[in-house]
Every structure is written in C-alpha cells, then in structure tokens.
Image (tube, rainbow, N blue to C red; front, side, top):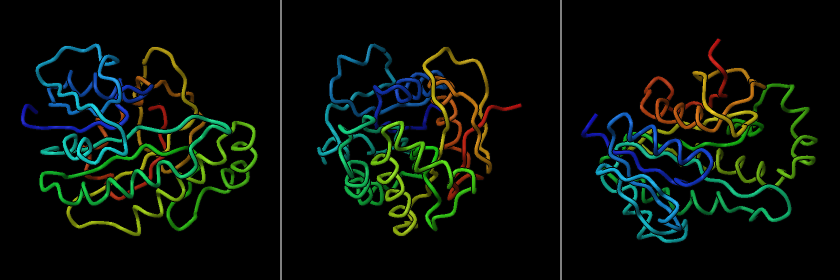
Length: 220
C-alpha cells in the first residue's frame, strides 16, 4: 500500500474530503488538487496538496503525475447557477493528461444517479423519473452534463488506463456507518458522503468493476 498513489480531484468537496481521509488511513499516498489549500486541515507526510483549479493544466498534471489511481468527485452547484458543460470541458481537458501518465491504472468518475449508460440505456423507472426529478431539484443541466461526460469517456476509451463511472443516489451529510456496494440496479438508499468516500477508494482499485457504470447501494 505504501507504494500506491491516488490523485484526488474535488478534494475539499463533500465526498472528496472523505476520499482523502480514508485513502490516507489506508496508507496510500494522496495528491489532492484544491483551489484553497487552507481548506485542507490534515497534516500527513503522505499527503501532497496541489494548488489549482480545473482550468490549470500544470496543476492537473502535477496532481496525476505518478498516480496509480485518480478519483474525481467534483461537481457544480444545483440550480440556475450551474456552469453549463463544466464537467464535460474538464474531462475533455483531463483526458489526454491521464492518457500520458504511464503509472495510471484506473480513473473513477463520480457521476449522478439518473445519468444513463453511454448507449442511453437506463432502468425504466429512472427514465420515467429523470426529467421531473432533475427539474424539481435544479439538476437538469447537471444531468445533461454528466450524460455527455459518460458518452465522451466511452467514445474515447484509452488502452493506457481503465475507468469506472459510479452513480450514487440520495446523498446526505451524516456520520458514516454502513458499507456500500456496486450494484447493477438503482438504489434509493440514503448514502452518507463519508461512506461514499470510502466506497470510492475501495472501488477504484477493484479491477472487476473496470469499464462499468454501477449504482451505489447499502450492503444488506
């Protein structure tokens, strides 16, 4: 484990901070991209903080340099203030950087619950609920953006690294207490950001999930 390095994008977000915490607890080296380094309160010799944003190519390169795995749990705000296409632009910028990093084994992208697979397929219930749910939660543009990201990643699959796109359901800010699993069926379980952070770290190293688009469910 001491030789494994994980790059984290969105490291100070609601999920990202738990990704960083758990990865360090497991003895991994962590390279975290942050706009404001003061938001990282952790002091750990295995933590490298990279100051920058998604438009800073040099910072992105530094964050993924030497990484075996990269986890992206970043996202925009709900509602009319969502920056249309922000994640698509970011992933398009990041993709060649990932492709050029010889150490990289897998990239995990945390998407949204209602986002379909690249071919547009989704369980019928989600197809029916998606437009209404996205409208009333202010997530219409976020859903469109993440749908485009999924299609882009599938259409630009690289031989140099694998990827996983996760689709967590209802997220709540509470103390983590349960184990989560990858599921082929949508789950309406409430999931804590802390448990999701742990799940992301465990999932990115699971080769059986590479190339998949799992929903996230509470382990029964």
